[in-house]
Image (cartoon, rainbow, N blue to C red; front, side, top):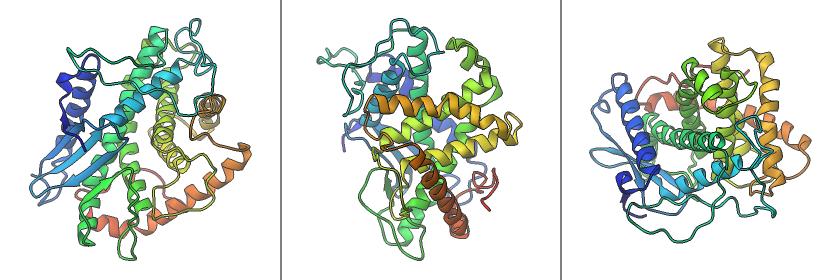
Length: 366
C-alpha cells in the first residue's frame, strides 16, 4: 500500500473533488455522532486516499481511531469509465448534444482507459482517455463519478458503524475489511462476508438515496445537464441507477449469470446492484416520489441502455448470454440474500454502533 495522497497536491479538478469527498465524509460522520453509542461516540474516523494504483478500498481500526482508505486506482478507474460511457453517442442520448461524440472502433475488452490523477506542477506522461466532447455530457460524467466515489466511502463508513470490525475482532481476526480480497469470513457464530457486504451496501444505499434523490436536486439533474424531456425526479433516479450499475460493474468483472448464492464471498455484482437500486426505489416510493408502476419505465430509460451499451462495447463484466437467462437467477438470488440478511439481524444488531435505521427503512422480504 502506498502513502497517503494529499488532494491539494493534485491538479484540477481532482484537488477540489477529493477534498469535497473527504469533507462530506467527515461532516456526515459528525452528523451521526449523537446517535453513536458509548464507547464509540467519541472515537474519530480518518478518511484518506492512498497513492496506490490497485483497485481496492479498506475499512479498519487502530487502537484509538478508525480509518477508511480509498486507493487512487479506484478513483482513476471510476472516472475513466464514467467519462468513457458518456462519450458513447448511443448512451443516454438525451443528455447534452451527441453530435460530436464517437464510439470506439474496437471492443474495449480491458475496459475504458483510466483517468490519471495528475499532480500540480508535474508534466504528465502521455496517456489515453475517452472524454465526452459535449460539455454537458462531460459534466454529467464527472458528477456521476463523484457520486460513485461518495457511495464507496459511505459503504466503508457502513462497515465501521455497523460494527463489522468488532465482528472480526471477536473471531480473532485483524479488524480490517478489504473490498477486494481472497479472504473469506465464515463460521456459524459470525455473519459471513456476503452478509457484511450487503449490510454495508444497504447503509450506503440508505444514505446516498437522500443525497441523489432529494427533491432539491431535481432542477440540477434536469437543467444543469441539459437533459431533454426527462422530469427532474426521474432524471435523478436514472442517474442514481446508472451510477450504481457502473460502480459495481467496475469493481467486479464477473460476466457469467449468477447461479448460486455463496455467502462466504462478495455477492455477485448483478445481485448487489439489483438490491441497492431496489432499496433506493423503495425509499423513493415511501416518500411518495414514485409509485411501483413507475419502475418499468425508469428501468427502460436507465438499466436497459446501460446493459446494451456495455455489451456492444465488449466491456469486461458484461452479462454474457441471453438477457432472459439473467432476470430469473438475479431475482431468485436477491431474494435469498435478503432472507439470509434478515436471519442475521439479531447478530448484526448486537454489534452495531448506532441504531440500525438503514435496515428498517424499507419492507422486509416475505
